Length: 426
Ligand SMILES: C[S@@+](CC[C@H](N)C(=O)[O-])C[C@H]1O[C@@H](n2cnc3c(N)ncnc32)[C@H](O)[C@@H]1O
Image 1 (cartoon, helix red, strand yellow):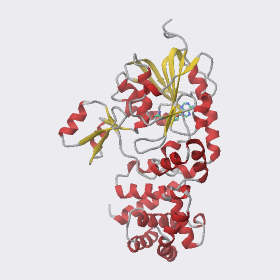
Image 2 (cartoon, protein in one colour):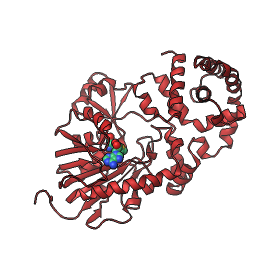
Image 3 (cartoon, protein in one colour):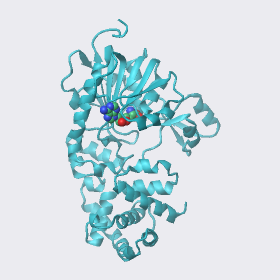
Image 4 (cartoon, rainbow, N blue to C red):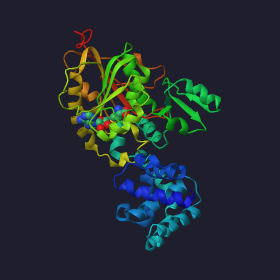
């Protein structure tokens, strides 16, 4: 794709993201690196970009037409994020707004593109940490309170970089084959079985289903499920779709029965492809996990990877930080509490519940374990972690990975039901 085609596509996608679409979903079918870099980079820097546009235009960006807003943000990002000369980016922005059918706005675009870069350095110098790292003030205050200033600063600055591609292979022999083909592979610093390729996007392996792209923190959740149940047994994943963790659970463990349940038929359908290679076979079930289970079955391992605010994944979903509202954290906890209640019911004597979220917010995680239900004990996860895992311990004995270069943010807690053996066995 040419630069002008990249720009046109990127601007159109930015308008759709503002309408509520998820950038990662829209970019799923887009292979052009120039479009991906422009869309995700612009979203990652939105606060300072808007600051400079507002200073240059003397109006709020919300008062601009969506196309004009997208073109200005993109144009300024090209200068400040991609290092494209101001004259080239400015000219590109003017042509772009014309191609988007808004020729009358070309004067405004031209004027703002000339003035906005001049405001940048001052705004960055005078702005606070939240502004500089383009995060909302409320999240900055929340993370500083919960994790300390240094950790908040580091987590937010990590969210400004693209997430590296980490994969696991359905068959370990594939590493040798790819190395034989001249692809340089590196294993993850702490997550066993996670690999990164240098100079290759592993597209062939991913398309063939030989490799599965998954953040190391997600891989860790699956790995812990197996580590707590080395003898395998029966496992149910209650919020399984689109199936990434279930598939890795199957790969690592010696399970006799694997069930992937989810409320969403569409997302479970996506999981079908992911499970094609799994042995044993994964049974897919549509089920609302807040409702009482239809069967009496109890499980060695119950996994609840609950719907959450996703604050650990802001580098993958940069628009999320501007969409989330402080009250969303509390709103999610109601559903999570209901899901947990149902999940605990399904655990067999001696079995485990593994509760995880890709949120780092205490209320969505340790907040649910301030009182431990009768008949359960907290499992201290720290001794089970792979060596070198940079996790912190939560106040309820779980572990938290703050967003960092090596992984997304994630929080995991586990409870073990008292007793020995399986209800189903007796
Ligand atoms: C964090 S995602 C799960 C990701 C999945 N574990 C993976 O690794 O690919 C949360 C899932 O919970 C599902 N969900 C939401 N409410 C549910 C409910 N009441 N019962 C069952 N699943 C639910 C959503 O459809 C979504 O697929």
